[in-house]
Length: 144
Image 1 (cartoon, rainbow, N blue to C red):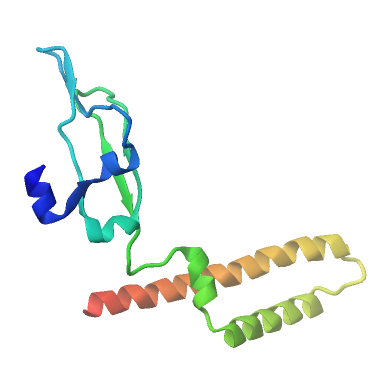
Image 2: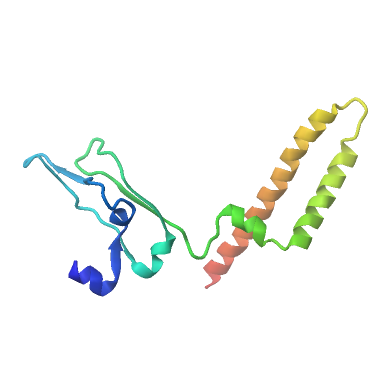
């Protein structure tokens, strides 16, 4: 505990589960459960900790310890949309939707079907935009 304080580190699982008791190891010889696995995180990065779970022992005497930490570099997909420049974002969407509705405006086509299908078109546009943005970010990191 003293070393952890000196390093200003915390046990991720304990932070998320302060009152729980769980184990990551079962000794068949001693018939005892204990916690052998830890993931420590510097306190300055504690705000990036999303979750910490101890899984189920299955076919082994060890349980997996999983920790999810948000990257300070990559943003979740929902935040990417907000980062796109509004004028560009809305301009492109307006052009795509105008083209879509003009192209699919046919007397024999149900208005409901056209409306439902436009959701797929715009969804595809956003996926394409996010994919392009992610590739650019990955390329920037690789170039470092």
